Length: 109
Image (tube, rainbow, N blue to C red):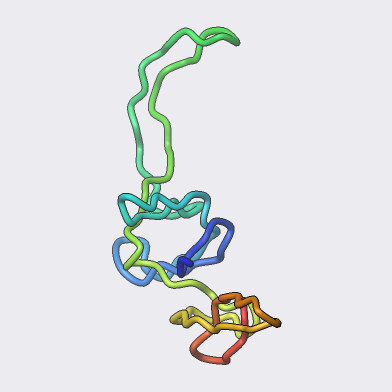
């Protein structure tokens, strides 16, 4: 189980966007990076190209670039602060489930 998942609310703790928060759009596991909505915006020069729906205009496009996992912290839904994540195991009969736990308030999320 991962500490940060898609649709989690995270806060950037290092880099040029320090202090900003946003929703995780995509997690890139192999590269240890996440794509956060509205964070680490970069400009990309895009060439015009032909698509199935017609001609896609080129120009300068602003988009989000990935941020390293170590530079973001999940925001706890119950206490509303950036927090470290722990794990708790819950046993139901012969089945065990693992869930994420806030290190500040011990809430499960």
